[in-house]
Image (cartoon, rainbow, N blue to C red; front, side):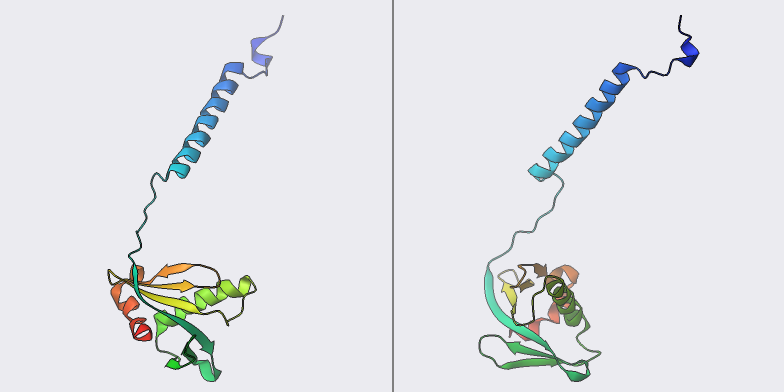
Amino acid sequence: MRDAATDTTFPKGAIIGSAMLLALALGSTAAARLAGVGTVGIEAAPVTLSRDLLFLDQEGGLIAVRDAHRQQHVAVLEPGSSGFVRVVVRGLARERLSAGIGPDVPFRLMRHSDGRLSLQDLATGRIVTLNAFGSANAAAFAPLIE
């Protein structure tokens, strides 16, 4: 006869119950993800004004901003100034670099009918809603679209 103290088998009911609980948790998570439960989205207002811009690194830490279609000078960002503009553009440029995309594809700066500004990387499709970082930061981009 077997001694209960040396019995090393695990109860079959506990294994089945654990597997069912795990399947329920994974299934619920997948269903919630597919249904969009718990996500927050901002509807994009229509674009009222847009401008395609090239941001070109220059010597001495300068960044030249050019209108991509008219090939005209828009601004020069001095080192130590326009910090938010520099951070956003550098972040998008770093993403481009890792994807093997050069600086010749413009960025699209857009003003929406609700006053928000957004910057789209036309090379990767990524869109940054600039007002999400505060109105003062978004205002740093405003002169580039005028």
